[in-house]
Length: 312
Image 1 (cartoon, rainbow, N blue to C red):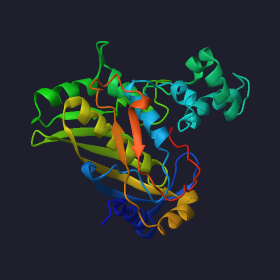
Image 2: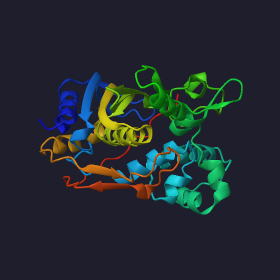
Image 3: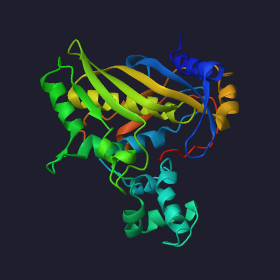
Image 4: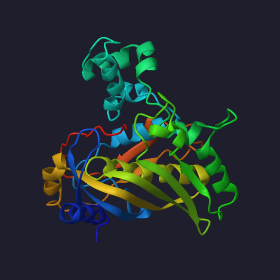
């Protein structure tokens, strides 16, 4: 059976058995199940969904942004990737409603981020989100811990160990646990990932994702962490193994119900492949042009509005 049916079967499961909940900020209805798992053998193709076209260019730029340890949307905006725009605009809009800054639309806000470096430095920051935690976790003594570099070095020197975990879940910067003004723009949905080497040959990656927007977010997450697996395998000197995706709260928002029903009518097509420049061996050296997506022939895209969640 095509591995994409794992994803499609979870969509169907949510529609048929999910409990109805409501999102905290917007009040929008959603259907939710709890605790699901998907597995993808990366030797059998790259798991970029085919039952709708998925924005690979955005996935790649976002992952490179994470790997830089960056937390400002300017890199993404400069590369015409707008998946984080709403979260940066949200505090600006709040400040404008309090008459602290001039009111501007989100489109005007993003144009200003691109054109004005000082404005971007002030308003483009999302707080210590994924990349910052992966590469520059701030320790109590002031050090910045590079979790990912540590994991790579240990994978190379001690492949049989079991503790190669990278966490984005840092309570010091999450919800009410953070000091005022120090919280991340959104608490990490994909919270931690775990590497394992199989038979000193293949690198496996397991992701635990606490909150799973199954229609819009999860297709990105599958591809992003599969791509991360390919990158780290190359850097550490292994073949890509299996990507295991553990899903916590798995949900579909009500403004995506019709889109999901349309997607479920479609038959998966063969997965594409991703090629990476073989000469790149350092995690800090990768750039966009080192990657190529080959033989991707998906069904047409299915549009859906993003639900800007988070806050407390």
